[in-house]
Image (cartoon, rainbow, N blue to C red; front, top):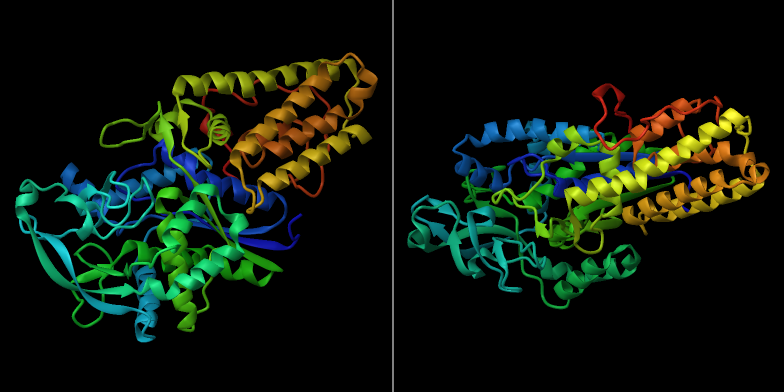
Length: 532
């Protein structure tokens, strides 16, 4: 059991505003963070959740060039689209921010403190420069093969193996979006700031050894690989004209690495979302980081080192207590790809299908420990069979029992015991230590199976005694995964007030339930719950 008066800071990686969110995006950290936050609030815990967009990311520039569009206009449009798609999916964050002057000042102050404390080192390094485009190459500006796993990759991180890379060491490296190809490449030497990662390796190893139970298998393996050898210095700056400018002498043509910027950025948005008020009134405070496995190095190595450096410099900053990863979600057994058009946009799916039903399927097939597959035909068939039809059968038999006058709002010792057992199960699968969307969805299916089984039994005297309470508990158990369905069911059952994990809901109206409480097709906008 978790501490009763517990508070959580919940954060997810900022989506890059070079496009809207597709279903692969929705299946990952954003959905996980939302479900986790909903359950913790249901339990009475205080939750501050924050998200922003990765406006200073180089992929914005390369996408804008490909689309022949101004990057600032691209960001503005996609920021609005991303927020709308999250809303359509009922994915709630207390703030979904966009960098502004206050944000830029906060990030700059953070690194100026580290610079003044001597935490950052300055080095001369060799980099590729594309003479045709007059651009230094890093991240989205360069492509090649990963020197660790040899898969195709862009600069600085390989999304296949999770290892960082120095763009200068990429195999068969070449520029992106350049008509000159490799002919325009030359090697130049530039000044840059770095965080000396090797000096933090022992502390990082100790940190993760003490929190090993919070780590999923693929992340544990990656950490073992990364921490068994000396860590390369982490670049804090790049020579570029897109991003937050560096104020230090000799580095005026550089910007902060967005993956370095991101750590203080998270702190800023949590503060904007109400971080201080949450912290003061809680017995314990946990910082829960949701992330995709492909970005694990930045969050679990670079950001942990940045936090340690900041603490050494006298700043009061947190280190994440939990890292909850997910793998890639595949579409028809292949990676989602915007450039190849192999994707389903979130807003297109959610304009056609019920957001609660989609959320339930994303949970049931979630790629939490390995890659999983999404197929539209499989999805619709599965939702119809395992959610819509199953609940319709429960509704039909429940209404019949209401007509027979055998349903009351009271519980029974047997049902109270069963419900408490399921409550304990849900508490485990929604705990930050053992969080599992797949197990949560499976557990909900098992509960519906139990309710259906007991409703159709002929021994009405025994099973009907607590069946009203059992159906009411459906609303409680559905709330984190399917908030609109839970709200509509609670309203039809006459459950007063907000659903609370501490008190089992009691039926206020024993009456037939209407059809359509959960459907495959999208609901009208007026029926969708926006509550968190």
